[in-house]
Image (cartoon, rainbow, N blue to C red; front, side, top):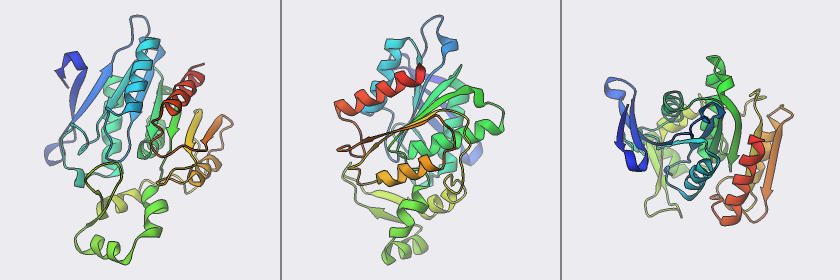
Length: 267
């Protein structure tokens, strides 16, 4: 555990051992004096996103206004963390997220998961429950959540060429409107994703869940979020559908909804 840049709260931890070791960069805002027991927020980003996106920064600034802690990190192969993106899997990024959570957070946390980060958040709750740490999670706020996206959203639409690429070279590429480089999806990611599925039955999480989903989302259909709701038997499940909302949910009015939902979960 080390501090890289005290002025920006940039830190890093080593996750994994030997050939699997990678440096995970994170930013941690400490709670104000006397507030540490009140917990804070943990940001879990999406596929190929980083911890300095507009939603993550807004969450961090809101935590500062409230005097609460906020912790955000880059998965391996993302942002300024080490490791190769092509080696990434749900299990690998889950391990890193749990390591950051256990190393830097105190008190009950609200996990805020965006897109793939929603899948990571759900798996984190499952793993924390196994180790009797569920009291460390106050609630989940999921933004355009994409649990099981490898199996549910991509596998049914794979072209014959993509299937061939997965078999012969171990990956395929897809153009993305979110940056100049294409998204890369590996055979390893699909195989590992099958070991982390959460929509195969009821999800007994034991914590409140709020979901914000755009109905104009080209990447994660709003029906996918509704399926997640149907699998959550808890009474405290709230979904907000934003009729003209896209996948990013980064407009000013979207961020206002996100922060209002945070305040509701705190209350």
